[in-house]
Image 1 (cartoon, helix red, strand yellow):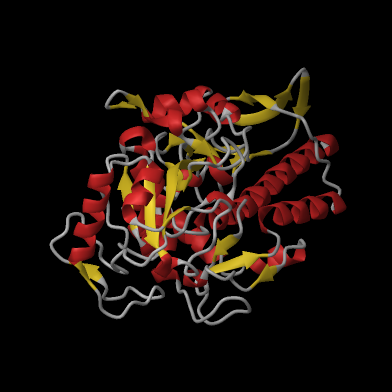
Image 2 (cartoon, rainbow, N blue to C red):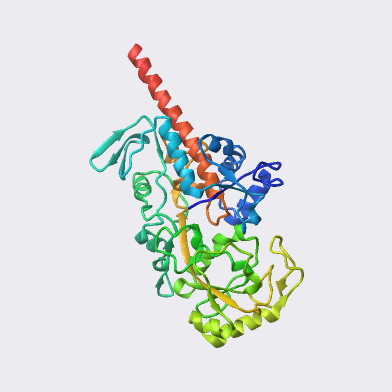
Length: 427
């Protein structure tokens, strides 16, 4: 379901405009993570993002200009044609052309180790030996019991019970849990994740990016009590969209409502489901099931606090509120032009951040020491860089950088074993 890659570049490059230098990229990451990042590993991923697209093209990935409604990221993010499915299919075709054998329906349930050394993977009753291994088995976002334990109970509600899973139902964290139980060094908070506020009508699994609702910064967000609870205009949407899932998770019933008027239409990517539409605010309140008097009062209070300057959704404009808590820092316009729209939103988990600790070689660690032949990539190690928070395209940047690093290091480790075997054979 992914669609873009956050890329460092010092000058315009094909589908990317202007420049996005390393330090600005790292500062953006630092802000969203609140400093919970390994700077060395983060900068490795950032630098790798500047030249990985040529490698991706060699393996069949094609890039395109940013989609309409995604102009905030035209400078920072490269979009690939066909999204994640086309990306993965291109990689599979390239791998098979290189002679890589792909095993489908092969659930790995155990990794066989000798201390810190990989020996074999077990799938069902089969044991598959190898000289080196890369673990890329994802997190545990589909494991509802693990999510329940990680997020706990708040005000008598099990927070994770109302979560939707944006991707596959098969990321249950089997290999991740096995490795942690086997003594691999872990990193990250199990309750931290890439968690987005998505349409409450989305399916439990696999709704993907089309269920995301991107109009939050153009209106107000209300909880079940018809009260605002956070600044909707704090920063550009690509830097803030991923905080809303967690914010909604701690609201009553794990639900919230994005409220806009007709001025917002055409300014955001249309989601797959249409919003609830009404010709008046009290009618919209009734349609959403929120308390009518509180709903109307909240909107009128917000409208009265708006100080409208020159509205420009492409910049951090001067349209803000005064005397309102929480404030709306940018893009604050009165909600008064009918028809009015509401989108009910719930937390949508994309991927979890609990993972395995690595070094610059992406090696799995045991007791602070790197394994000589076991490496890890993707969600299983992203928590080294993403302690919390998210910014658009950073997951793909981490996965691409450390996937290539892990693959390269695994090949080198295997080659060392081959050379050792050949030396012993000659001796």
